[in-house]
Image 1 (cartoon, rainbow, N blue to C red):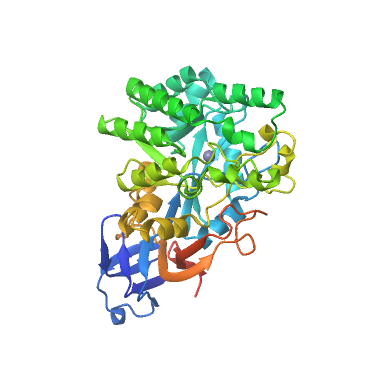
Image 2: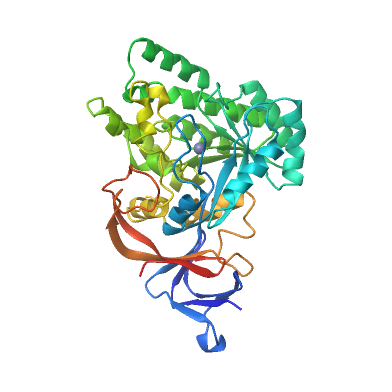
Length: 445
Ligand SMILES: [Zn+2]
């Protein structure tokens, strides 16, 4: 029997912060309260004095080993899950991305094979990259037989995986009544493609033009349309990586109207601003920051932070999708549309949000736990097992050291990438001990 006692810590959940102890037996939390270690002979005891005890992080949006023309995103399931554990994240959700013509089930089987090397638990969302009667017929079996209830559609990337608004409406019409959820990458793909072509035609090929070809309107328009479809089809929607002030406002207004819409943002929209795309910077220096949607203005950042505290934004996920600068990002040296889009932060998500959110009083520590664990677990159907510290819940627990200070650098990160968009960022607080299924898997003592 594997028995762990965590004593003397402050248990922090989305609702409360309390001085209590936890008993974890065979991977599951069994007792919570003030416990006497003598009554649990043979247990391994962890003294969490001066520390916070929080549910393991739940990151519902990552792309490990994502195939692109520039090669796979450079964290695979093994290295990515290792980086997750280093940062306190014990569960993540990745995507099945069927290629056009492939059945959803076949794509699911092969993605599960790839994900088998993960060191943590994981879940998968089903990507919908085309819409036809065969795909439509697979939706219900996906939900009922495979337990995959979230479907992801892209309004951008029309040439490869994106679908039209009409097709999205049909998808939502099928998924909604079946009890599922549709996640949407909200960028107006047609407008983006037009702008990209105009820039390239005028020999404007540097990385800098990536941001200019994804103006805020492309996101705002798409979010408004998707919210409209949610009303029409009665299907809940989850807006991934919200980056703009007006997009956040649109989500807030929809929530006030009782529409089932969930908002997500990522650390880079909260902590970086468009100065990273400064036209005076070297082309190669800009490339690590090429993400979609692009990093926005300070005013957008401020609205997103407010969105975290007023519950407009439900989740801080990473959209973890790193590419090496050498050999991957630099493939777009003469054409910004060839730079693979994405950056990594699964290792830093919790420390960054704690340091720049909790310690600056933008959010409370309970909101922090909600945003990085409880709320995403609940939205994606894991709310009965993850995101809380209660008897019956999975023994995925982080003992958080609020005193640790350090600096993020490419020289010491666990993520597998030759660049680091948070280079030089100071952090205050990190996981001291990470417990996965009741077993200690990572200890920074
Ligand atoms: Zn993504």
